[in-house]
Image (cartoon, rainbow, N blue to C red; front, side, top):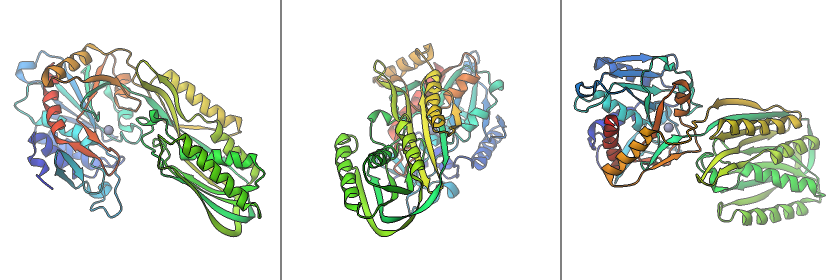
Length: 481
Ligand SMILES: [Zn+2]
């Protein structure tokens, strides 16, 4: 372990980053970080507003040389995804993060780092704190609860903002200027089942080792989804002569993560155990071969748990449950070849079932609101065809941008002239708060930028020091553009 984070260059940026990482700021727990921002403004005599969502706005007048320039809105989110390895030194949700420098990277000790979006905040604080940077009037917007459905941005009152030029600092790759993103929502389909007790051979079926990943950024890998595979196996078993019933099913952790593992407990009629195992084995061979390139570590196993009685859902309900998953769209729904990107997708992220009921959670995304509407309708129709309802939650709009604005084009040229390297102007198939601000503020001209980081939302999250340094120089130049 090397240097102290606060001693890294640019010192102001890393100094604020270090302070921020020590404040626990999981989504929904933003009071402390929000109060820190208000205090920061008070100490420097800057006007600040805090709203009921704990969003904070800080105003800083233009420097004398740039008073005639148009106001710039700088925006970052204050919350972070808190995850920790077992036995990690700190609980990031309660004590904040303990971070260290190694080589060109900042890491956290066994937890997420919160560079998403702590580094965005640190950049903005460094601008607000400076007395040697030329800039126009700054409206700094720090939002709460971004990682939990963009709740802070959704509740933010943008009517007081005067700026039309908007820089969101929440992108994870230095060589991208983002000018569009996907909208999305989650749909929950709950179902009630009739239960009974069934005797026979009990088996536990496990599907594991899938690549998984973020349902927005990784959906274009066309990898396997363990919830779907398990339903496919049930479908085969239901079509065979095997009599089997379902006791439990658990797959996936979040609607926005591709389901990497699932486990189910079933009971099989006596004397059909061997035939059952054979079907599972041939299914495992077939799908392992289908996904050989995307999910080479896939494992499908069934464990014989011996003879016994199991509480199960009725066969009728099992057929219905399997049928819903079978018919739901999952994966890439629309791919735009010219832009080389996914425009619309769904992910059957979380499935759970017990003898008395089941719950299916699907994450949906669309870079066009109209396309998202269409796929929402597909999903709710599958539910209603089975006498179920799909509850739509946390819907947020797409940031639709058909062509790069003048600001985006100038920002691209600026980067090239500063670093003699190309930077891509892209749209992403994931959510950004720009989607909400571009809807709230008329004629807004927005871009999203940020330094290189990897593994966000995981315990291997890391932030590049050299990229942060370049991004700081770039941001200062963007303010003068
Ligand atoms: Zn973020």
